[in-house]
Amino acid sequence: MHIGVDEAGRGPLAGPVCAAAVILNPNLPLEGLADSKSISETKRNRLAPLIQTKSLAWGIGWATVSEIEALDILRASFMAMSRAVEDCLRRYSEGDRVPITQTPLVRVDGNHSPGDFEGPWSWPYPTQAIIKGDQTEPSISAASILAKTARDCEMRRLHSIYPDYGFDRHAGYGTRQHLAALDTFGVTPIHRKTFAPIARRLALKLDPR
Picture 1 (cartoon, rainbow, N blue to C red):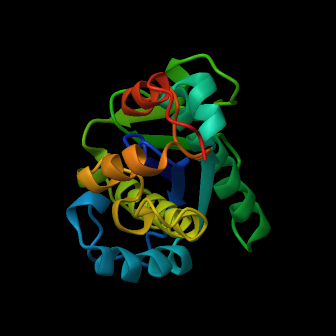
Picture 2: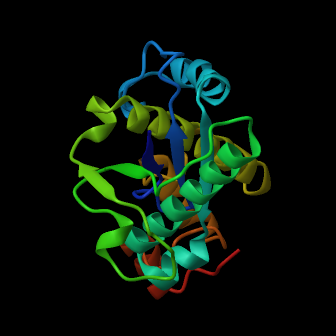
């Protein structure tokens, strides 16, 4: 048994970063798993509940904008991953499952894992960091889809609070529309103030909302 882990939301200028962890059920294979960025929103939204119901366990973890600013985006992503694995293992232990008798292997998308860095998280797991793992490892693909759909949902919620920025369309990425809104309406509390486009605007004394 192993846990697949991936994150969504490193690149945006606003909002939290989200990670997901998934233990797939080998007896209930899922068709159509792929990197979340390579499939449509409609397909992601169809697959996400199937992943949740057919997997042995899954978990979601977040790192806030404040944590991103304090730690940097890479370390904040690792914190979210740690929280996702903890949530996944908690859900697994609460189900009618065969007990885990040894520390599970974790497979992470990318060339680094939380265990490679020091930070305010716990990572006692043996880990395989797999470059393009979201394209080649089904459990990581599943985690990629869950992380992306969860974060998109959160950005739609934030859009209802800050409707002038179009978060429901670009999810916080630095699109032309988003940058224009920043120039018109200023920086909000959910913008990542350590990211260059936001820091530049703050330096020009755009008032926070």
